[in-house]
Length: 501
Image (tube, rainbow, N blue to C red; front, side, top):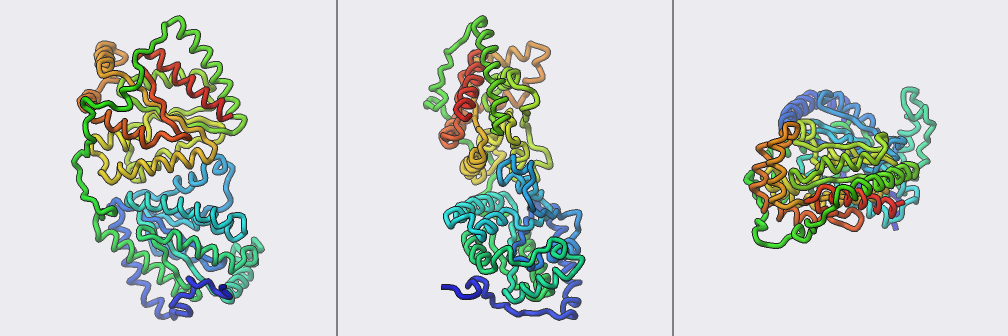
């Protein structure tokens, strides 16, 4: 039974103080060190995420303001996640954090971030230990995923004794320049000991080698600020001195990591019934009927606030664009958005590969259609050697977790692979070559990819096997006959919407 302070927060530096003259003497060197390490960071390919947490009135705002005064603000971004806006409520919980992640070469300062909700709800008794543990597990997954993609995560927990907190809160309420004097908060909203107990539980479950916590005794503000500055400098410098560390103890290589070719071996694609066809007259009638059905269902989804994410992957010339056009013809243009995915821009390359997809997650009732997607990491990036082996191998888990978060928010996730035979692909390539308005669709890259078809078949086989889940399934579409493939996609989507609604 714990009578006073939670054990974890009985830190050795309790009562440590820094005099005004000591602070003044130490500051020039610290600022010079931070300026230098920030300059090195700019071209390093590393992003730095600083998370500040702690008991109420501990001075998180003072610390962040101090850091912004010491650092070049052109390379820093500060985000405070206060009340959830209506836009944020219409998206998955972590959407607002993903949008705010710093780019490589920059420093992001988060007030609480993804820790705020489990701490607050755990302290208030809204979440039990099981729910808190689940939130901590998700946080560990997220931080590991970011850390392995060159994000340095530095987490500070600022601690005050209860008597110190009472004194600090009174000073803040008496200060007309403080937000506390305007909000009228008296420190009793969150029970001190309940908050520390919840904080200890969360810290213990999220303190990892890739994203460690630094516990800072904050009774003396000068000691607190110097310790934060020195710790931040030290962690960034050590990370940059390591160059490009291999967090998973694998040998990094820029050579393509080709899957075993599927030559002569059956894959899941060999079971797709490519012989299926629909005659033109029947197609026209069925398409119109299916589009009417889809229009009614998408309006029903909009009114009930259910969003949808559709993913289209497939062979070059398999008909993704034509299928998407017939699909969207059955949806009111105000309800959907098509996101064509090409090579990432410089801004996108400066973030985790999922960042650019999180930005396009639809709001409640809307639909986002991805013409190619995050599965590029498991296909073209893998086969062409654009991703390291450790990157694409962990992407299976990362993608499944990403889609799980969408589904948990109530978003329908469905993925289509449009399949055609190698001969049919060649026929379509040659047809594009001879038709003036289609010539732009055929590139040298298309021909190169075709030469590696057996490798792509093996990669697709593994991708579908490892990422087709009950909640976010893959549908392998026989697109040898374009008409049959288009109807199959629209009807499958309608069936899933009906089931969802």
